[in-house]
Image (cartoon, rainbow, N blue to C red; front, side, top):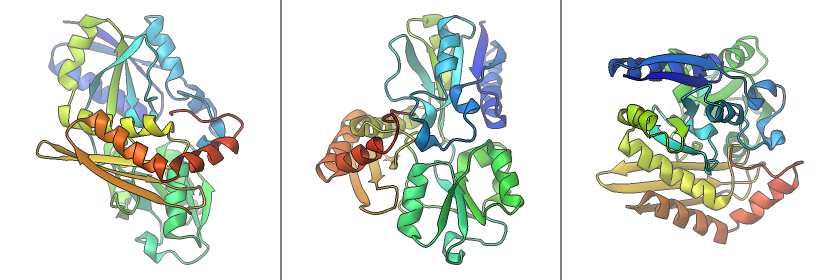
Length: 311
């Protein structure tokens, strides 16, 4: 059996993800070793994601390690992975998804609706900020960076009245008990790929690709391909206010997508259903563009130093 070196970021959540993959590989008789790699996104801890504008800011250095054969596979949160991979790489597997939704956390309040006017809510995401402003324009939205533990400490210290985090990360780290409310996707549409893990390998490395193929979950892959197809059509990523969530009922795919200005105005919502993931994602994305999503996104790109690409 193969001995596989796993490239991962060094955060607690990233290491949980890498170890989860390593455990799965061991069940198939493969040995594994985790190599921690610091990425650009890990170094820019005090800058809001929307201000960075760096393509692949959580993946570039890990891909360099793949190229140099210092690691054999890379484990990513799929929402961090650009929709267009460099030609030397391919997605070998997308694991079964955790909860894709966003979570509300607060020391004092049990739901977003209970927050008094004008209190502060922390989030690292322009997508969440835009949807929060659409739901509660009276709130003070403030940037929140750092790993999960750092964000929780800031909440506990009273720096924020509430914070919004991905439910998947909290559940994976055994911190689901701190969640006060889970947002339904109609209320706050998640990021494309949120809650899913992806395995990236060197293109043409058939032995490694075959070794990890058992990790692939076809339903999760179809849903996330649909979401990423929409994202690619719109030309945006986690730095812009695009929500996309797909799910399956029988053999049919359903897609919900939202685009809004950062201040929450001009919220555009589109839905679609179909069989082919990429076709459905592209069709819903094109409908959003005809309704003005392109103007919203171009205005955001123009307000930053560099047009943000896919995350």
